[in-house]
Length: 395
Image (cartoon, rainbow, N blue to C red):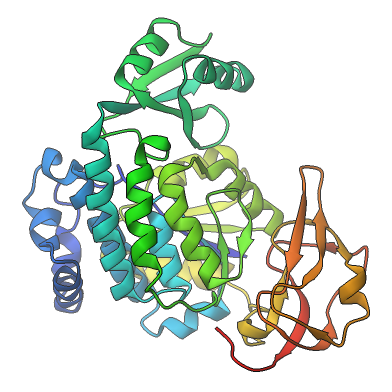
């Protein structure tokens, strides 16, 4: 099982794009995405210094474009990916890269959205002096309690020993004076408190734009940062990406879902390294690959061939499948059990795990062709539950 992930803001470094631009095909693609996003990605990826590419409105388009171009390097014919990639995920802004890779949105839509996302988040950050501090080590419960005590938000939960606190500079200063036991605090060089209520103005702007974005249901499993669930509805994928600008990134839950899926190979898109490092600590036994430069593309393709597998979602059009959002025991609803037709929004059942109980609905209406599981069956994230023949309009 192969999972491909895209990093978030902070992964960039001065000049990291230079090796990719030596290839004329890659350069042409960057020029096109620069035109779409109305930003000189080539300049910022080669000549700009660390302070310039740290700016939110620069870093975010730069990261998304790099992931999109690199993906075409691995899979020159994108449809080939759907038979190999078991799931995709992105950390924060990397979710836009992942969504484009899963064909929820186009590369051009991703670049317009990330341009507006970066500008809106930069504007929200300028309204109030805020920041973020990484908390390394310490007891998890004690760290979370200390963050809450000072009115801060656990904006990123990256797994054992890696939580990022965010809030006003005054709150962070008080937190630094009274840190959790056995924890090391590391202030981050960012423009503001991302993934907190301080980013709410940016959510409103992106939500307004998103209403005009046409989407498709994913062609492979998309793991959401919000709660680690597999999301199979294109509208919901976009809605979650917009809302998460002001809500925490639960990368820990995303990795839990990867393990539930039985992932054996974890490939991080460039500029890679951050998520691979986290995975090595939190996902023991999973082989990782950090794609940093184009001279690794042959090895990256071999890695995908080694860990890729035939996708059950590829064998059936995704618009007529209802899938499990997480690992657990599936219980069919009484309505669905006896129904020959499911209306859009009809309850299908729920998936119960030791953590929670998640309702499953039919995003698109249709005739019930075949139940692929039985009541009480154990299911994995993204596993097809029921096959529907669409009736009327589909999204």
